[in-house]
Image (cartoon, rainbow, N blue to C red):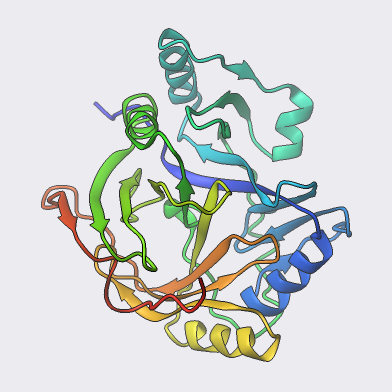
Length: 296
């Protein structure tokens, strides 16, 4: 019997004081497609054949405000709704208007133990007749069954949040990192998966004053990491971590600061987990090599 669970990261919503700057950064540095109708108050970004994957809205928080998760069927959405309610979490069904706005067949709203708004949906609109069109020469992003990418969320109550996502939404722990030198400070992180991608969600505490530590976008072609790094320097964006390869998911990547302050990891070659043979491990470094922190 198939386990009832979230199957992928569908989308995120970021509130930023400068939507216009974010749009320029996403288009000119990250190679995202800006959806027609976007403006300086609200914008949508594409990375595949979905109508959008990143929703930018105007506000003072400069942080993630919605985490969009996706199930494979309505029955799974309803089962997780019941599971959440039984555990004492308030769940609200999305209205027809909200479903149309998100481009989904069904939607549930709730809040995780760290206070982040979560949306659970299924049946997302896809537009293969309108393929992703990158604004620069680009081989595309790894999404499809693996979802948007991954997010690293900064939370104070790590154990409670981990139990929430694993116990109620069906995530599985891939591994842990506990290091004394995460940019000169202690870093303890839990990495969780919901499909073959090594992790769609990581959590840990860092004293950075925001919920979104980073968003990872994975490219299909190795050279697109290098081309993106060239664009970072050409457009004057701030690279925050050097090129490197993570020790757990094997991602070859670098990090760059977005206009709202959160980092974007831009990577290639992430590990796809084989469930039958995967062993949960703890590592005491984040990277096999590289990824030096370039800013304080």
